[in-house]
Image (cartoon, rainbow, N blue to C red; front, side, top):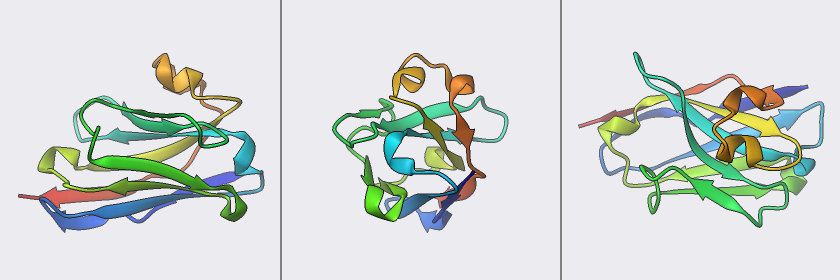
Length: 126
């Protein structure tokens, strides 16, 4: 069972990146997927979550209107499209799977997520 976040990189403020969260060893489609980030010296924070079927999505206030989460269950992959990036978005981004819904994400119980992937670094320069 493995989750892997990818797609990070260095981008200028105002730019865009698309992160991917790919699963192997299990069917991603029955899990909600949360995106989290952790900047140096800061606590981990929830960024977004998408339900297993994609019908429900959640966003942190700091990214609403700029980030969009989506999924392609046929490809066992979840995406986080990040637009209008700001320097304060700089962090390591992680994806995590939770069965059966985003409830742990919504309640702030990230430690209850079932599986965590390795992170991908996003750096936004000013």
